[in-house]
Image 1 (tube, helix red, strand yellow):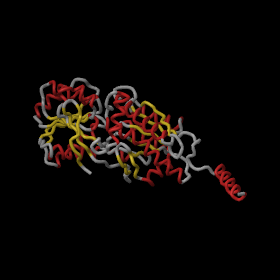
Image 2: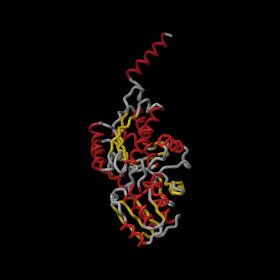
Image 3: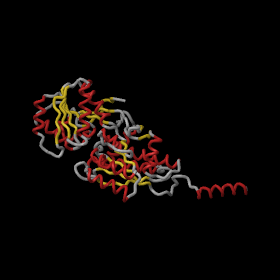
Image 4: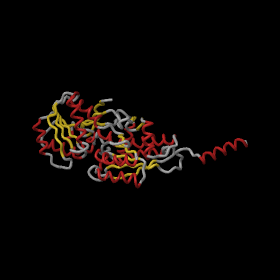
Length: 382
């Protein structure tokens, strides 16, 4: 008995001197999140933040990361690159955070050099410009870039939907330009003809001149690749001017709120999604019910919110790796953990494997508007 007590006492002393990583009384692990929380894109940004807050709450209620709680430090970048730069500097120099994440291609591009300078890991979530893969050592995307969904979709529009003559209207910015280029290349390679390729200012409100060019080109499909509400405005005016041609877009147009706003004009609108639906993943059912219970609606940009929900789980996996290796939680070490673990399970989007070129791959899903709401059509790609 005396020997047993000595062994237990020694074990207790060792635990005090060398506590297990992630013990319950450790300080919260703070992670930055920046998105447009005010301004014209706030409808998407607020819901993306909400999804991440739910994920952190779920993780913490289940014991956190080895007993350590996660905490989100949120900042508003308003969809403006200059504001994003100020936020990134604050995260690094004031808050001393080891990593942060957010969306919008132009803002991510502006923040990437700041992340590299501070050796702070940055996740791009939802931005789709292919150049995001080349922004620096510390910038990784958790979301497939446009050369995944638009490459698959261009071929689908021609080969499956049977469209031969494509008109492309795209926002003249870091979202519209690269995404539309990939779509055009894919559509042409499939054998289609691009009869109109026109940029527009997403801040303008009257697109009559642009739409008259569409009418003159006589396409059998019109693809609108914008940022947010500009997509709805362009499509609405297309219908108002009497053009009933098939409309397509990408995940940025995936919102039941947009379908409701467009009304009858939305019928048949076909878009891509890079997140699974209830048909592919039963976890999504509970996620949808959560939105209905708390907000009595579907999330704005539902697929994006699924990705924002999964990011804290990726962070959990990286932090757990560092705990096991007894390494401090720094930007450099989180990057090391990311490269070592590579594949992380996400409750809402499935496994995410980070490639050596800073990209990820996911299946592409097709949805269309029927009877006033988006409905699942099919899966394309791997």
